[in-house]
Length: 357
Image 1 (cartoon, rainbow, N blue to C red):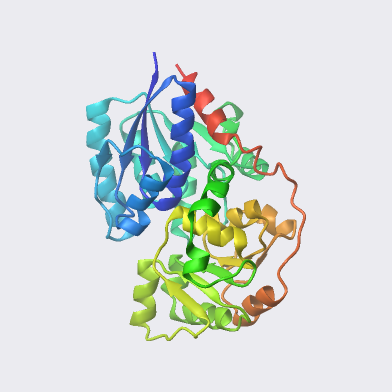
Image 2: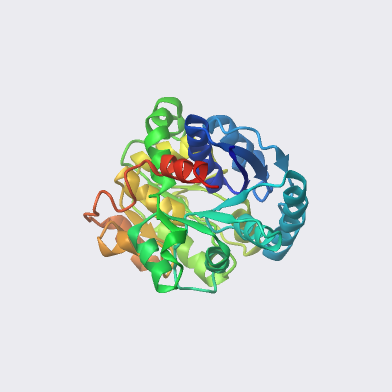
């Protein structure tokens, strides 16, 4: 009998991860997946276009909870997921990453006494002021099966006392996604032409973390640092960041090419051909490595310290001078090629879940 699995997604990085894992379920069999979109990311540029590009099945349910605070989004999603778990009676619930949707899925599963699987378990920034860090810790503590993307994540879980029989080293499903979609993105995307950019002739930046965009001093420092770049800086702007820039009366410098959120294929194309990627996103830090492009981390810590330790990425915080220095002289490092597995994480997850009782 197939494992009946209720999968909870709600934000664009989760759509990418689910695309490769759901495809692996279809290849391997043994899993009946019920896909639930919480609606945490709800506008077309941050949701619908991803499903279309990635071939991700239309979710069986959309809870439409987006647009509220962290507590509101989590609470609304929990309420909807509780009803769906009662209705569909899954054998397992699966969540991805560290968003409000992740936490809602974990709490709803725990309250319903349904086993929980967590993809991308064991990551730690050790900054509990980050909502994502709280979501990771709580989700890992509640999980019955933890898929770790790196050996360091495995070590973190061991130090926290998670029983070894609950943990699997799957590797990173984002590595799978870059391998599967990278060349397709280059062949389909026209974004460099559309923006009059050349390979290696620009910096790609992303900004969305609460601690950055909700702090006027940090946000100004970040924009000032990017303004010092000797290259155009392409900044696909999260709606929340755009709102904060307007509220604070900031005027981005002329070299900042602010654009609306873009599709996954356009993002991959921009990542692969950038001179440097400056980001406060956990996922984009890793994607910089997968593309072989140096990265500047626009935060004071990272959940991917191995990339900093091996010199591929550099932490610059919100200091304008450090940001400018990283752009002027990008880091150069050598990271072990298998640090995030072999690019077959989705198949490993599918095999494990299909074999569950």
